[in-house]
Image: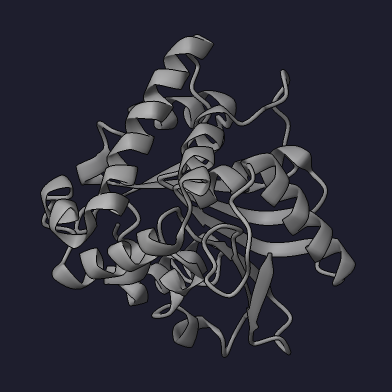
Amino acid sequence: MKIHEFGKTNGTALLLIHPSLVMWDYFEYVIPLLQDRYHLIIPALCGYDKETEGDFTSIEEISAELADWLIAHGLSDLSCVYGCSMGGSAVIKLLMDRRIAIRTAVIDGGITPYQLPWILTRFIALRDFLMVYLGKLGGLRLLEKLFTSDEYSDEDLTYLADVLKFISAKTIWRTFDSCNNYTMPKDIMTDCPHIEYWYAKTEEKDRKWDIDYVRKQFPAAEFRVFQETGHGGLAVLKPEKFAAEIERAMGKRPEAEA
């Protein structure tokens, strides 16, 4: 896993973990807004990096690898960890492993483990895999039919098609399988004093299980609902809002309207 760093001389460290079906450049509009004040740590997750070979492994493995890297580089105390969708799953796992100190955790549309019988999770993973794999085989035209929401521009779909060209079927399957079924301890404990779960108003129904899970397992967590973006759209479509919300969550800015 390759780690990209920006603003390394700054003392306040932020770990930003991208969602699935995109690369680390998901944060390209956010980096210029934050790198002058913070040390940004942005991993290019295995299977989603054109510059390195290999497939996606699992939420457990990437979380362990991230913790190993942070500890080895003297960064075991982070001011903030943010993760979107698949990246949100990694944030939850980092919280559970408790190998690094996290002052603020932001889980943006993060996927939580399904509380369902094993056989049902297989069918759900297969459904999600087939939808994305068909997009990989069919290219841009099929993606336009599969993803009809207004939140996807032509440029977004072209980018997604380019990513799908190089990621493997194994990466796609492991992503959905792992995000839906990563292991959690029986007794949920975390030392993180501030946890937020973000989601878009348009995805409220899709995220219901995840919201309920976070509300149950992290009763002190705060919830932020965003009106003008879809799933994972804040960093790409409204980077200034994203930066302001991260700083607010860290206590660097006053409360703002979601």
